[in-house]
View 1 (cartoon, helix red, strand yellow):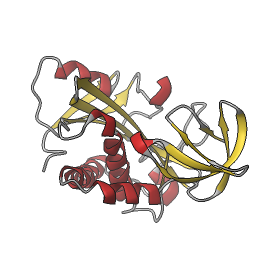
View 2 (view 1 turned 90 degrees about the vertical axis):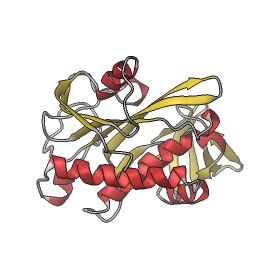
View 3 (view 1 turned 120 degrees about the horizontal axis):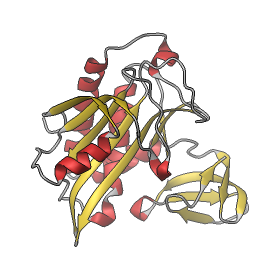
View 4 (view 1 turned 30 degrees about the horizontal axis):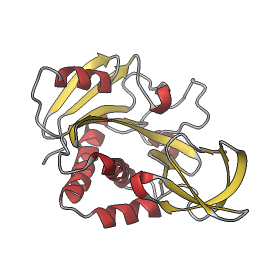
Length: 245
């Protein structure tokens, strides 16, 4: 086992990703180490967003990886791999979840998990990756301005043992990471695309030119999102270049 072979628990942290970044500067941790906490005072999401989580209710973890076998230009495969691992875990309890590009995990139109991956790249090599995951498990109410959070307990009416959930999630992430190590990139990409939120459905988006109607087809090089535009043509978007409406 790689992911989950070493667990470091802290009752409170500002951010698991920030702690992981700091500890990597002066300690040699084994690959797959998971840092987890009951509460983050400054939990981080993509684009500087704050991740809301009630104390002791959800999974707040960072996984330390050393994926030197991945070229920096191909690091989106790490995002694909982690997204699929979270979906594997959730599918134990709920029938369907999707991946809102690039790596938010959705159940119908609600967000149940977020991923923040921070890679340290030196020259042409990925030195390390810190994979932050916030996964809503037992939280009953959300108080922030986030528009659509949901938890596993809200969906199923069941309360879950967080340590058991952590062990199962680690197992699912580990299996997917080993799939990436084995070089099964085509399979990973195919499964990732098949789970994309709004795949092959005409939907409203917003890009630099304003609102538009398009249909998600695939992901291209470097993880860019391919969208067929209703007015004609296919466009590709990098992260932050398009919004879902």
